[in-house]
Image 1 (tube, chains in turn yellow, blue):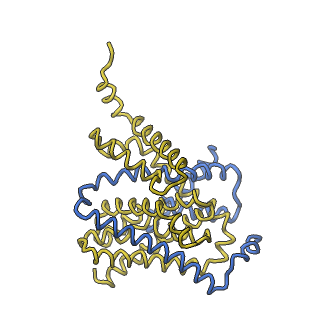
Image 2: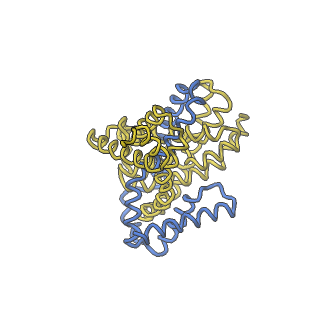
Image 3: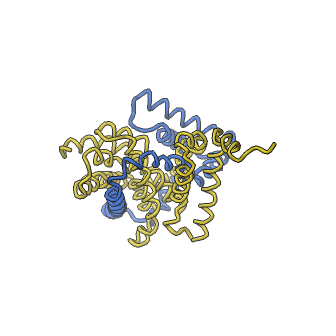
Length: 240
Length: 124
């Protein structure tokens, strides 16, 4: 007897295989398209993959948790990949040591700018208080951002979504913004991308240039630590 | 390959243990990165580690996709304010990038660091 299509679907929907494979296939195809269109920013493969997968999941009525049961194997590799950022960083250690003082200064200025712009814009656009608090740590890597959000009275889960959106925005605009402003120093590019758009931006910086990627990875880590210290302090100072 | 991935996971594990034991604000993998950076400064990077690391870093964007799909959980939360949120995120990301890059270039100039010096510093 032939199994019905719905039977096959019921079986597949229960195993991690389906959504793991779907994630890989969709990213693979999105990346091919991205290279075809000469890395046209709106065709960013992370953006396209996320949009297509959310559409699929919504159409099939699949809850996120069920998707993640399969996709977690891809998600897990974020950890060792983050550790691996030490390799390019080490390769540019000479340059890093040489410009350590300006680097720390720019990091502090960037971190403050990231917090202040959100507070000012949030007030200007009149978002709710809890949304504003959830927005403040948005340019920091997800686990740190969620911790900060909780501490300053935001919604950690909303912060997680805002962090991802920030990362995708940063990845999409990074190259053209740097080119337009003639920022061609790779360290400056990397630092800016890492501070403004954490890991997703760092991933993009790597595609642009290994040196930019190295500095982006460093900026991502240090900005996370710095924002942890600055955000609660500023929230109190600004009386939010 | 086994050697390379093992080394990375050991660093990550050490990072996770450290951050929990000392109650630090940094996530385990970030501490693992700093730990590995320290080891590399001391011993240098062997080929087997470099190959695995480069392979992983090439795929870095892919690893963010599962977390990215998580946005779907917050569709309702964002429904009312999504346009304002998008505008805020876009403008603040642009301003932060420009300010950070500008600050680094200006501060480097003030400190008298020019790119030509790069070659000299690489030797030590």
